[in-house]
Image 1 (cartoon, rainbow, N blue to C red):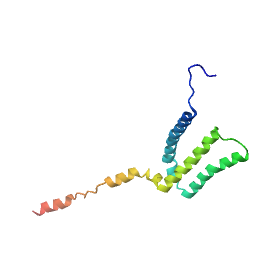
Image 2: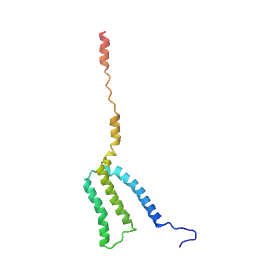
Image 3: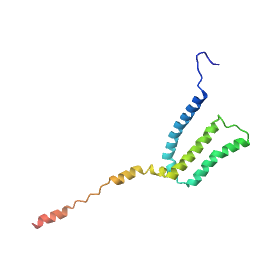
Image 4: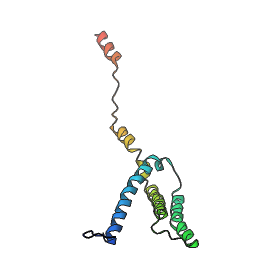
Length: 131
């Protein structure tokens, strides 16, 4: 029942807000996954791409075989999230960005170390005694 004076959001605005919400939540989750889980694993990048393709096509084929509509269900978002994780992981593996996240601190420490010669007090002491 719609009350007087109440407006309904247009469908395009609803879709845009859902996509923005999904993107923000997913980027936060993916960055945490990348930092704590994915950077510790070292798989073949082509295996990850194959898993992304499987995650993209197989659930749709299973839903078509069993005549099940995935639209508007939680499984639609789960399938999308799995595909996006695998695809972004493949892109990170391809560019090498996933392994450089942990090495930034050590690279900066190595470049800032200055080697200073050690003081040798015995040499100075020996020159003073000879005079």
